[in-house]
Length: 423
Ligand SMILES: Cc1cc2nc3c(=O)[nH]c(=O)nc-3n(C[C@H](O)[C@H](O)[C@H](O)COP(=O)(O)OP(=O)(O)OC[C@H]3O[C@@H](n4cnc5c(N)ncnc54)[C@H](O)[C@@H]3O)c2cc1C
Image (tube, rainbow, N blue to C red; front, side, top):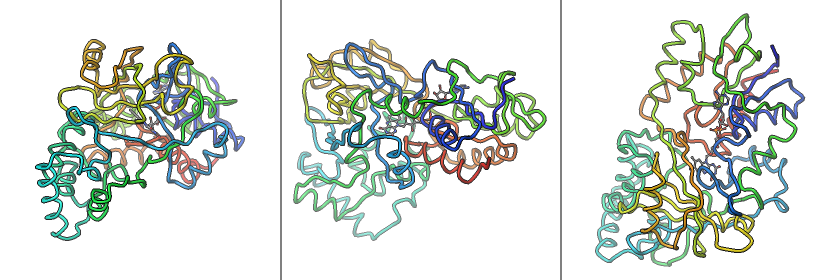
């Protein structure tokens, strides 16, 4: 049996960041990963010279000071990264309009502009209500942006992404990710026709080569990492955690899918087992992606709310770094579809999309988006608290069931290792 003080399961960004922190503190740890390489959702491949973000197109940005300092202590910002400005658009019928939509209403037909501004004026005149005081995601969008904008853009786009009734989505969970209405800004942007610059990801960092796989590989350098091992049995015996009857640890950190724990964890107390079973029905869905060649465009993201296509977004990853494209030939992009979309359906969808897209490769990732419904957070918090009493910690997008970006995944690891676990 191989013993370490800390055993981390999963070498996505969460597991890699925590292992890196422990490594640099000279702690005794081991990192296990079921896949043949680290990265999890941020994995990339190079196919015929095109960089393929297997799940979406990952860029780096953070407003969390501690994460910013930690991240840039591990990367050379000037030499290893490019800083790029976001150029996002929304495809409405045959026309591309600016993003975020509320600042580009002047690009819509007159009758829609009249209807949307009429509703925004009423909402604004009704006085300032806390934008987060609504019961669910649908109520938030309707209450803050009006019914016309909701039906035209927010509803069709978000329904494609989340594949669920927006009124069942809990609001606190999306905090920090939501478009916040600023009526003065909306009026000014539409009158002055100037771009809004202060959005999340309005500027972002991107590795010069190898995309987000570069970030994973750098974090993994020199770590005690064993790949190709899936933790499929976890047991607590004599104050130690035993994994696959081969590894033991005083502290166990799990970054995989918490719904699987009811099956993986053996000999649990009755109350723990019922807590584990209580999270088995959490809802998630996956992402299908098509790597394509594309005509040249200045866009970085194109959002696709239209119901005439099952795709919801094109990410022009070829514009993020020149190295993402073959030396000669067309540029690269990734077309995203929610859920398990067949290659045939994805290829068919290309016919209705702009820029003469041509299929190069494809992928389906069953677990990409977590969905939190009312009550989920409380159940997960109770489970986390029970496990923590036995030095078992849940960290990461699917372990905490949070809509974490890479920076939040890093922060979560930092908080645990700084506050929760003492070696
Ligand atoms: C479409 C899309 C686009 C995104 N874009 C961005 C972006 O632009 N910028 C950004 O910052 N974030 C982005 N994100 C979020 C980002 O992907 C996540 O924050 C981050 O990858 C989460 O890392 P993680 O380690 O928590 O989870 P994961 O990446 O899921 O890693 C978990 C790891 O654990 C392993 N594992 C699971 N179970 C076991 C087991 N039993 N035994 C052994 N190993 C196991 C898995 O193989 C995996 O490697 C995006 C996400 C999606 C879905």
